[in-house]
Image 1 (cartoon, rainbow over the protein chains, first blue to last red):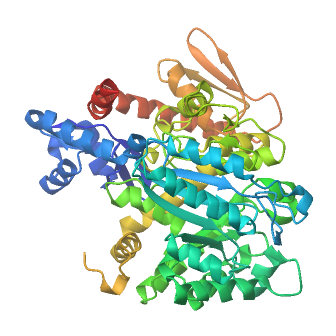
Image 2: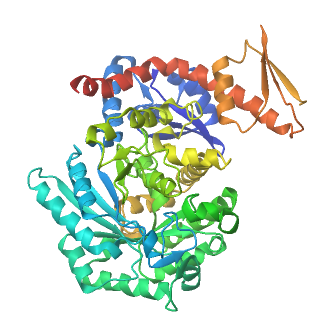
Image 3: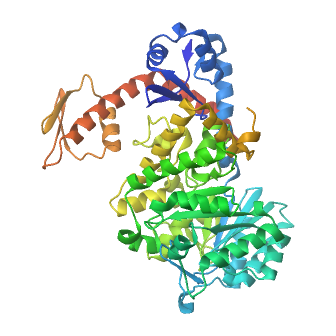
Length: 474
Length: 89
């Protein structure tokens, strides 16, 4: 028998094989040695499994096995076929909250708002429509983007007018703190089928400490009131929340999960503090060692799995990004963890001054004066200069896990990716390879659970399908 | 394990050494003789890191040996998956 391309690593007392299309198989150490020395001697059931997952092939069917594997690999990388789908527009840097970790360096001072003008918005729309992707997702960011609601309305309507010539599928997302939700905003979101992305940092005490109100009214109370309004007057499926973990909330992460469950949310994205904007300047006060985060993350992952087994459906989104790649033929669509990197080719960010950046984090750096990743401007460059220029090409070329000296050989290559902006920032802060360590840790935990706990595998499939654990049959 | 490690070039290739250094958090100097690599510390760091680097070197060498058995097929796999697309474009 012939071995097909694979990589390997150890999981507890076994070895895990992975291949380019993301399939995996656990082998005991003696069987792994047999696989390397003489695969023909392996038990028939293992050989059958390894053939079905394209780790082994009979000599006479090698061409067929390679053909099938190449199709699977192409499916995994299908995001390359469509080019930039996600377009983020920064409407303003003004904000009505004063979050202690604000990654975007927003301002409550109107003179520092740097809001998007209509002529620049018009030019951004024309740029976006040049993308060859048949399906576009337009995401409004800030600051607090709803403070420039009229500009948002202009963009949506102008894009729809332009789209009458292109016939693309358009999706809209607004990233809002939900502190304001006038009726006309809600009607507009419903009319244009918006998704609403918000932040919920945990129980009221933690949320209000992280996301400091500008007045005496609790941000938590206002946000939750509007969240429930959306659920009843629009759709609970159209709103999702992100949890940013600060030093204050790290010891209480289980309580944060409880808040999500109590408020009826079915997903939680546990996001470690990112070293950008205000968070970077306040790392000593707000940050924590990565090892501390990972210890708590493991505990909370176990807690979430237990909740699901007991009948409460709640999905952890970061784990689900990896699970999507491990358990299905598809990629996740999460641009921060893909290879080639999503910067520019899957995601583009248009800053309020018309500057174009390859990721949200790149514009956060620019807001702090570091324009290393600025690709150009919609006001002075053509689409081709921005998206086909050498700067973006080099960024992509230099940041593929398949070609990285550090990554080659790693069995987690099919599930991972390099975020060039994060790598640059980690180097600047003399904390290299933090993302690598975090992702490898989480993928290892997921493999351990898949290897040892069949019920856990069912929980993971329930996260990917959206079917509650107790209703799911495999 | 002392402040330096000498490894024969017959068991550790340059590629494996470079890959291990890229992945390791250990900073050391590398002396390249005709027959050996000599990895050594200049400072007073904990020598357990050097030991870790040594094991990583051997792990990388083993990976390279295994990879050599499937590398031609991996290249063919990528060609089959993407060459037709590249030619089309």
